Image 1: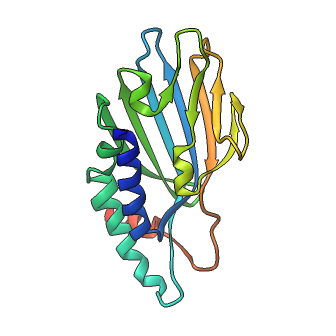
Image 2: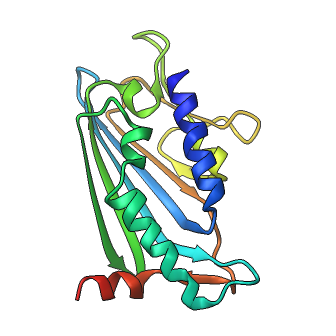
Length: 184
């Protein structure tokens, strides 16, 4: 229930600022025998999707939002309230602004993985589909659009999931130059 409320809160916040988006995300989960582990989320091509009445220079406000709310703010802490640590970084890759979040967790439920019993497969529901994420690939089995859940064998210790979010359009503005300017 608490996770659902947090997802709805983030959806609401994201809905108000839907112009800050990302092209693709990649989730890598490394599990230890005790159920703890590390979740790494890579964000590829962070950009602003401008409305018809916005100008390219208006994209600066979305970079400021990225820095204030996500990079320096508490949105990720609210999304993952029970994890041990969250590390964040921004970087340039292939001429795009990218980000990485590394989360150390104590148990799989802290990051949204589910296992009904110790003998059951691991499951990850694309709760993030509320953010219009589309399944691309994984090293597990995908339940399909009617059941957006990825299943992994309980013995698997390295889980991989790739999703797409927003395809850039002619109204998309890269936030890379704002990032590069902030580093000067």
